[in-house]
Image (tube, rainbow, N blue to C red):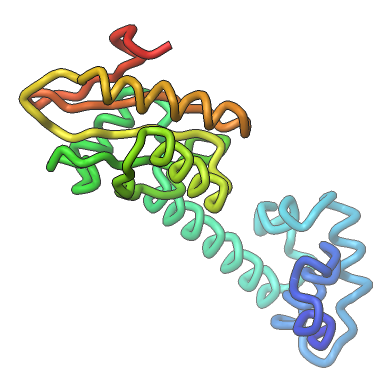
Length: 207
């Protein structure tokens, strides 16, 4: 089993095979495959097995239960870490909180782009490279979105003492059209003016 894991990676293993290896950590010198198959059949999947209560898993023995509970806790901590590293920016409040808390809020006035996945979780927050035309800049942003497998974008132009110009709106419109051709959505073009955030869509200046 170890050879199969190292050769093909964990994706090639069935649920019962992963459980078989976990059970081996707590049950030495015994073929754990029958017990693993029986347990998966009882609970339905590896995930449901690991999430089961300790009493329900008692037939596996204390050492094996401890191993499964360690896996459960590790998965929980990884999920929490991912949530912190990849915040979900699916509301205006969450977005502005992120911009307020992060140096990535483009406070210098430069353009930044937030790249999001299909659940509006942050994949990347990057400065947009300057370009000679709005068309070139829009296409560069969309190309980067494809590299990150992003399905949505939010542009952020940092705090200034003025409202958005026609050039800012033109770039946003060009970017929205270019992104839409590749089924990528420009959610909003955010700008900061005199200490607060607003958006071109929110103010009706971007269709």
